Length: 294
Image 1 (cartoon, helix red, strand yellow):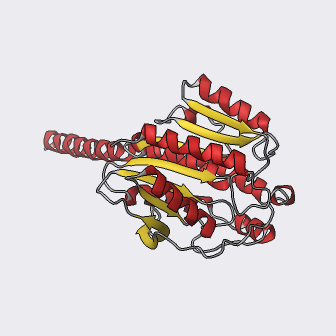
Image 2 (tube, helix red, strand yellow):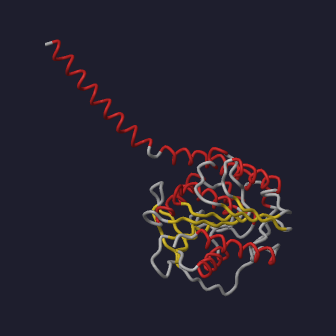
Image 3 (tube, one colour):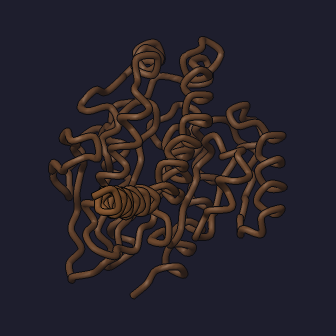
């Protein structure tokens, strides 16, 4: 009788061990993604703190309204990783393709300027699906004060979920490219990190670089960045550190620097630098085309 009880206990113990290992294995399959999300918070929270400050707000002049703008795309919704719904300005490729460009707004929100930029990239890249994500869930700022308030109340975990949802919206095994300005420049790099092996190229127009070396090691694509020597967010010193960090982990980063200030590539910005913006745009298109998977 005792022998039977011992054998039964061993059997139950073995089944429990197998069940625990199965759960552990399944959990570990998402471990890398969970770690990246955790790392995201370091950079994103630092940006949120900076962008919620008056000195940062003073770097931004109120954007000009774009007149007579005719949209090429349309607004759509998609499921996000937190179980909610996200929205984006979408332009479908003319032919079926797995190439997706995720376009990310400035701190103003998904306004007409960003939609027009999405239109431009769509026309000049050729066969590419373009998805300009709404990181503020419908909110748009028109003044630096209102943008600062939006940033103070922003939920960075929600924004990570929106990007993850946008990547999932691209379907099975997509080729993910990204481009963004300022707030969106930072998110363009973060999108490449979140996309993992599906990331094929990322364009940063200024924006806070990632400083976590371990996170940079997980990058699976090349990065191109455009920065202003008169900018303070990021400053030339921060850009130089980013270059050194990328080199230290053997990741390819091209940087181009202009004698321009913050937001120089935004046509609706009163401090718009047309010459620098045109050169940067030309290089961005060439970069994306050279990295596209046809």
